[in-house]
Image (cartoon, rainbow, N blue to C red; front, side, top):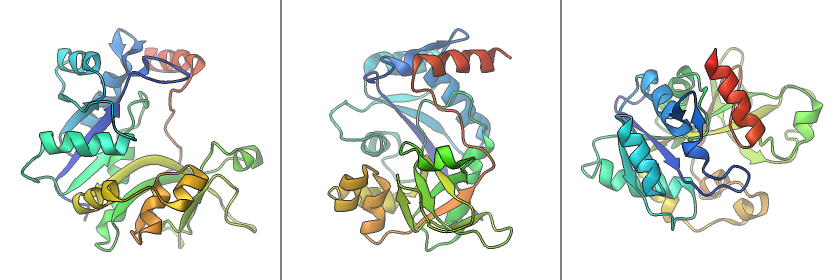
Amino acid sequence: MPPVNPIIVIPARLAATRLPGKPLADIGGKPMVVHVLDRAVEAGIGPVAVAAGDQPIVDAVRAAGGTAVLADDDVPSGTDRVHRALARLDPEGRHDVVVNLQGDFPTLDPAVLQAVLLPLADPAVDIGTLVCPIADETELATDSFVKCACAFEGEAQTAPALYFSRAPIPWGPGPHWHHIGIYAFRRAALERFVALPASPLELREKLEQLRALEAGMRIGAARIAHGPFGVDTPHDLERARALLAR
């Protein structure tokens, strides 16, 4: 069974190169980060909070009735922001798993968050994450589509994640898997991860999850049919507005 007491933490900050102020972008009269929070609550797997890098995000989330804490914007990554916020959200360590959910998935299917817990049914797995099929050769060759080397046996829904790369891996005929950057950390694994220095392959590929693999941590991947739609550009924002208007 998946862990019984997860918490979902959504890191969000205003500084963004392609879409400044993204978490507070209005979608149907509601800030984008609040849409993500709502989708997370709908998943029904545990409490949800926003780890904000800026006070206006905290104010917007609280105004919508959500939970938010200020995790000052002096940390190297969203994972570090989640870790910092967790110390204030759950100092007693009641939650055994922390789901790190980016704040730019306003149309997220809540079932996706239930799926990310599945790999943790194996007690040897430290971190759960998600993959979906790569649709075509163009996606396979695009370095912004991060690939995961994993192999699902038969109808199995989970598999070990052996490597992540911007290159098209693995070689040879067969399915290829697009990595979706949503993670379920065991509490101890998150503590260990943020204490580690950036690793050589992490720096080379510019993929944070390789730090965990290089340190001998085990990542399990659950497969889903389609990846969530992420908002990175003004065009994406207009698409999200149209989708949610339906």
